[in-house]
Image 1 (tube, rainbow, N blue to C red):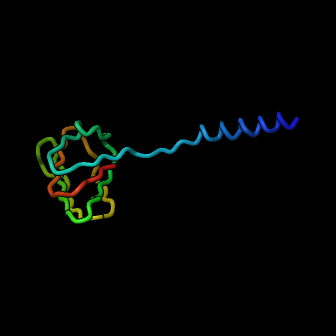
Image 2 (tube, one colour; image 1 turned 90 degrees about the vertical axis):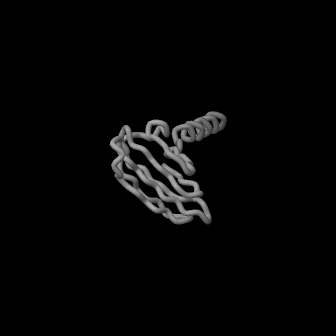
Image 3 (cartoon, helix red, strand yellow; image 1 turned 60 degrees about the vertical axis):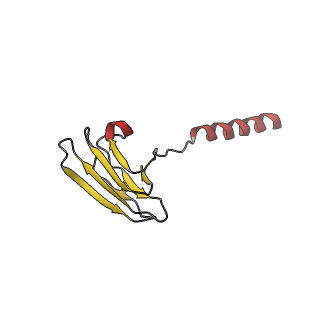
Length: 105
């Protein structure tokens, strides 16, 4: 009877660990340059956050629509908090200036 209880507890423990899986959004680290939303494989029409992880460098980010009209621009100081981007659509372009590292998640 003890073996049955130990086996039951063991299988319950194993099955509970399999069910629990962390769900985290994939973040991308970008440096200075021009990027298309399609090339970055970001999900469209969802809100993304940006953050500057560098210790000394500032970053300026521009988001342009398909007609190259500015949609949003953000200046990120070193070790900045997270800022929300407008929902990205197909054809949008992202321009990053500065020497820091931008994290999009």
